[in-house]
Amino acid sequence: MIIPTTTLRNAVGASADIAKLWFESRTEKKTRIVFEEKGKLGDNGKGAVYAYFNDKDQALYIGLTSRTVKSRLHDQTSPHKKKEWWSQWSYMRFVQLPDDMDRQVLEFLLILAYSPVHNEKPKAKNIEELLPL
Image 1 (tube, rainbow, N blue to C red):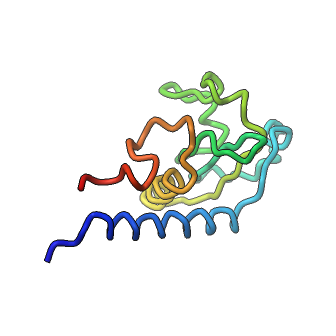
Image 2 (image 1 turned 30 degrees about the vertical axis):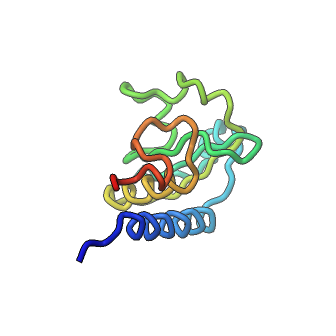
Protein backbone atom coordinates (compact mmCIF):
# COMPACT_ATOMS: atom_id res chain seq x y z
CA MET A 1 0.00 0.00 0.00
CA ILE A 2 1.32 3.43 -0.94
CA ILE A 3 0.42 6.19 1.47
CA PRO A 4 -0.21 9.50 -0.30
CA THR A 5 2.18 12.34 0.49
CA THR A 6 -0.80 14.50 1.41
CA THR A 7 -1.66 12.08 4.22
CA LEU A 8 1.81 12.52 5.71
CA ARG A 9 1.75 16.29 5.16
CA ASN A 10 -1.61 16.52 6.91
CA ALA A 11 -0.34 14.51 9.89
CA VAL A 12 2.83 16.60 10.20
CA GLY A 13 0.78 19.78 9.77
CA ALA A 14 -1.53 18.74 12.59
CA SER A 15 1.51 17.97 14.75
CA ALA A 16 2.92 21.41 13.95
CA ASP A 17 -0.32 23.09 15.02
CA ILE A 18 -0.34 21.13 18.28
CA ALA A 19 3.36 21.93 18.87
CA LYS A 20 2.58 25.64 18.47
CA LEU A 21 -0.22 25.43 21.05
CA TRP A 22 2.02 23.43 23.40
CA PHE A 23 4.86 25.97 23.00
CA GLU A 24 2.59 28.95 23.63
CA SER A 25 1.00 27.29 26.67
CA ARG A 26 4.40 26.70 28.29
CA THR A 27 6.06 30.00 27.49
CA GLU A 28 5.47 33.64 28.14
CA LYS A 29 6.31 36.71 26.15
CA LYS A 30 9.67 38.17 27.11
CA THR A 31 10.10 41.75 25.99
CA ARG A 32 13.36 43.22 24.79
CA ILE A 33 13.69 45.01 28.12
CA VAL A 34 13.44 41.74 30.07
CA PHE A 35 15.77 40.05 27.58
CA GLU A 36 18.45 42.68 28.03
CA GLU A 37 18.31 42.75 31.85
CA LYS A 38 20.89 40.52 33.46
CA GLY A 39 19.41 37.46 35.14
CA LYS A 40 15.78 38.26 34.22
CA LEU A 41 15.28 35.83 31.35
CA GLY A 42 15.13 32.70 33.53
CA ASP A 43 17.25 30.55 31.24
CA ASN A 44 19.12 27.70 32.98
CA GLY A 45 21.52 27.17 30.04
CA LYS A 46 20.65 23.50 29.47
CA GLY A 47 19.14 24.00 26.04
CA ALA A 48 16.08 25.69 24.61
CA VAL A 49 13.92 26.33 21.57
CA TYR A 50 13.17 30.01 21.06
CA ALA A 51 11.14 32.25 18.78
CA TYR A 52 11.41 35.98 18.13
CA PHE A 53 8.34 37.99 17.07
CA ASN A 54 7.69 41.51 15.82
CA ASP A 55 5.05 43.86 17.23
CA LYS A 56 2.48 42.37 14.82
CA ASP A 57 2.96 38.88 16.33
CA GLN A 58 4.71 37.66 13.18
CA ALA A 59 7.45 35.11 13.82
CA LEU A 60 10.78 36.45 12.62
CA TYR A 61 13.09 33.63 13.60
CA ILE A 62 12.89 30.28 15.38
CA GLY A 63 15.95 28.48 16.62
CA LEU A 64 17.46 26.18 19.18
CA THR A 65 20.49 26.18 21.40
CA SER A 66 22.20 23.76 23.73
CA ARG A 67 23.39 26.72 25.81
CA THR A 68 21.65 29.85 27.02
CA VAL A 69 19.39 31.70 24.63
CA LYS A 70 21.51 34.83 24.99
CA SER A 71 24.64 32.94 23.94
CA ARG A 72 23.28 32.86 20.38
CA LEU A 73 23.83 36.62 20.22
CA HIS A 74 27.55 36.08 20.00
CA ASP A 75 27.73 32.67 18.29
CA GLN A 76 30.72 32.53 15.93
CA THR A 77 28.78 30.87 13.09
CA SER A 78 25.55 32.86 13.33
CA PRO A 79 25.54 35.83 15.69
CA HIS A 80 21.91 36.92 16.00
CA LYS A 81 22.81 40.50 16.86
CA LYS A 82 24.23 40.92 13.34
CA LYS A 83 21.18 39.56 11.52
CA GLU A 84 18.71 41.75 9.63
CA TRP A 85 15.80 40.71 11.84
CA TRP A 86 17.53 41.43 15.16
CA SER A 87 16.44 45.07 15.33
CA GLN A 88 12.86 44.15 14.36
CA TRP A 89 11.82 41.90 17.24
CA SER A 90 9.69 43.17 20.11
CA TYR A 91 9.27 40.00 22.16
CA MET A 92 10.47 36.43 22.29
CA ARG A 93 9.42 33.12 23.79
CA PHE A 94 11.49 30.12 24.74
CA VAL A 95 11.06 26.72 26.32
CA GLN A 96 13.91 24.88 27.99
CA LEU A 97 14.52 21.36 26.72
CA PRO A 98 17.67 19.51 27.76
CA ASP A 99 17.41 16.79 25.09
CA ASP A 100 18.86 17.69 21.68
CA MET A 101 16.43 15.54 19.68
CA ASP A 102 13.45 17.10 21.48
CA ARG A 103 14.81 20.53 20.55
CA GLN A 104 15.29 19.57 16.91
CA VAL A 105 11.79 18.13 16.54
CA LEU A 106 10.13 21.08 18.25
CA GLU A 107 12.13 23.61 16.25
CA PHE A 108 11.11 21.95 12.97
CA LEU A 109 7.43 21.77 13.95
CA LEU A 110 7.41 25.41 15.08
CA ILE A 111 9.03 26.52 11.82
CA LEU A 112 6.23 24.75 9.95
CA ALA A 113 3.57 26.24 12.25
CA TYR A 114 4.81 29.84 12.32
CA SER A 115 6.57 30.14 8.92
CA PRO A 116 9.15 32.62 10.26
CA VAL A 117 10.36 35.05 7.62
CA HIS A 118 14.08 34.88 8.42
CA ASN A 119 14.71 31.16 8.87
CA GLU A 120 16.78 29.79 6.01
CA LYS A 121 16.73 26.16 7.14
CA PRO A 122 14.96 23.82 6.85
CA LYS A 123 13.97 24.23 3.21
CA ALA A 124 10.31 23.58 3.92
CA LYS A 125 8.83 26.54 5.75
CA ASN A 126 5.29 25.46 5.12
CA ILE A 127 3.60 22.12 4.88
CA GLU A 128 2.96 22.35 1.11
CA GLU A 129 6.74 22.38 0.48
CA LEU A 130 7.39 19.36 2.69
CA LEU A 131 8.34 16.13 0.93
CA PRO A 132 8.10 15.41 -2.78
CA LEU A 133 4.90 14.10 -4.28
